[in-house]
Length: 490
Image (cartoon, rainbow, N blue to C red):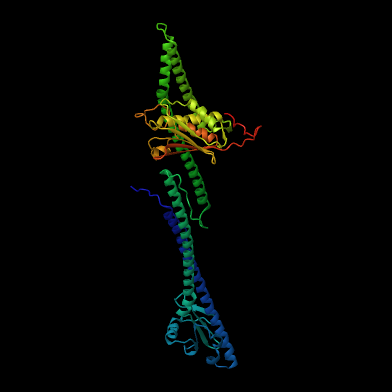
């Protein structure tokens, strides 16, 4: 069975060129050559007749003037390449032009037996080499004109060669232009193919670069432009899709971590509150005042723990969407640290030392948010510090910078890079020895950036772990008495 094969564009152009150009041009050249031969053949016949009449007229003139035929007859035909004979009626040669013996004998043998008089007659059997005779009665001579093969070759053959060469040159020019057009078209179409294949394989960054010239069709340029625009839109959509998938994955992780955090961090304080509340409500036992106060104190501490956990969870969306509201004003760092010290849970009674110079400037910050930052950092420092070590808070007045450091095991650099992420803890779920949500440093970074500050974490053998915070100075006018506003209290 015949199986249809789809041809490539180069093969199709080759077939079209063959049938639409080469064959018509060959036929046209053949027709033109035949027409040229017919025309030249007619011209040769007419010119042979004309020469015979001219020689006949000169014979008449010279015979009447008494001048000799041999000397004067062919003077006007010196450049003529044909052979011309003037014979008597008995065949005797009286005068000749370009005479050769063989040609003269051959021509005489072709003369008809009966010759017409006073009329130029074409004879012979070679159509491209016409022979003409003109028989005269007075004087009794016969003029014979022989068109030689050389004359025919120059008149017909050379023109045919010129026509063939012209057709070949035209065909070559057409082939060259077609080849250039096909080359540019094929290269650019291959670029389109490569672009489509790249897109199908997921390479959305691929752009088509055309080989542009006068032979590049507008449609190809338009297709390439639209393809590049489409590929760019697909690439942007793909990047957005990857981003959305990443965000969905992070959201799923956040949900899982949130459930884990709630299960670990809410259960303990709720259990304590429930237990001590049930104890206080019992009617079958007598509770002394000291036990009652201790129970109420535990309930209050655990309630505050729950409150802070809920506040941390509610702060996360505001930080992520960068819509955290802050009330920036001049804040005294010493006062903020003292307020934070009161709120810090320090069960192991680790010593917290404040080394803040007297000339430390007022900071441009939100009072409540800054205390929240300090409480988180101090609690982390207390929680992870080595036993019997100090927590040190030092400051650089010149750069409005302060740092909170503790002595602990060195944190690996790869862990330090992720410590600002949500639900990241230094100890994992299987080895955790301290309580916490893993949200503290994430919230700290968000609050500091909301107050136009910057935080950097360091961990090495010399400093253990250190959080370095840089804030903007507060530009506050002087109050009465020459003290900056806010200097006297928190």
